[in-house]
Image 1 (cartoon, rainbow, N blue to C red):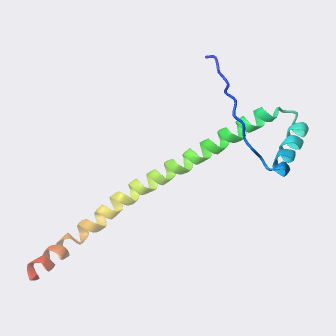
Image 2 (tube, one colour):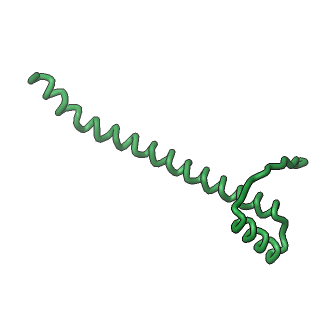
Image 3 (cartoon, rainbow, N blue to C red):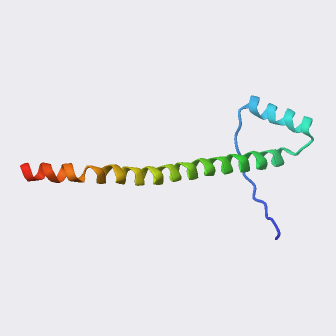
Length: 82
């Protein structure tokens, strides 16, 4: 499968750009390669965190339903006194 590239222009603080430049020279990689790797890591990490949150909310949903069902009897008893 052939990969296509798109170009994106971003603005960086001068100090950050200089750090990127220095790192790329030391690591002997292109700046665009470093940016691609960093963005892939960021996106993967963010997606993993979102998946963990979704899973946590789903687990809490079932726990909350259990808790609510335990109090159904109490709630029904209260309604008979109202």
